Length: 225
Ligand SMILES: Nc1nc2c(ncn2[C@@H]2O[C@H](COP(=O)(O)OP(=O)(O)OP(=O)(O)O)[C@@H](O)[C@H]2O)c(=O)[nH]1
Ligand SMILES: [Mg+2]
Image (cartoon, rainbow, N blue to C red; front, side, top):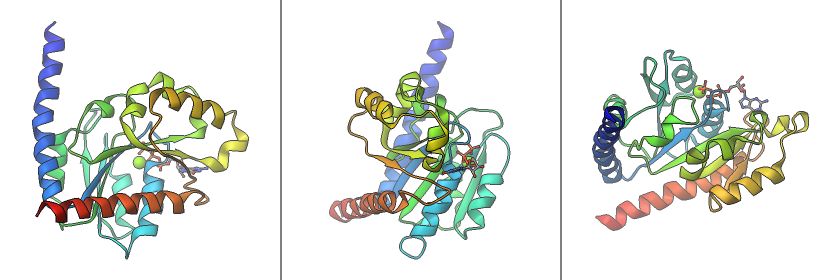
């Protein structure tokens, strides 16, 4: 009983901070994307490729969440994009308080698009609102077909799904048909982009969709003032 109440309190406190974050981000007209997946699905690789496409077109920032290391943040820094690393020291997800502190530490807090790479985990991150505009879920074809039905919350919460490592499809038993069928039951409206961080397949379509979201956010902000 006590444990359940504590969890409710943690989530309640997080909710308040997430609301504050959302208000700050909205006031600046920037789109904030919470990128989630299991470990190794390709979040950082897809971020690197996304940055390659977007640099020069819009301004970007990245908050990297990891248990211990700063390896992913260094990969982003090499691209010349401002980045702040959060180390959760064992916690399996990011929360809104961590994001607020990390955001304050970005060198330039005005940008068009802020990416948050969450800790690699298909369970805990889905439960924590960070104040983002939407959650994007990456899944790779190497993970097997059972993931959407086994971890429905994260797939239900996603506004968009990136099915990564399409270059490996011929070497797996992954069924695109079954994936589509399972998603139909959990989240029939989310667009699915079939991509490869290795070959660049599908990236143009993903970038076009993402830029549409950035523009939509900007237009919303202009209307509000
Ligand atoms: N073949 C293939 N390998 C990929 C692709 N995308 C990523 N990888 C590889 O998959 C491994 C993990 O990629 P990352 O981008 O680090 O994955 P991640 O989701 O950021 O991992 P964590 O941050 O540890 O959760 C690396 O060895 C990548 O080179 C892809 O589309 N195809
Ligand atoms: Mg990563």
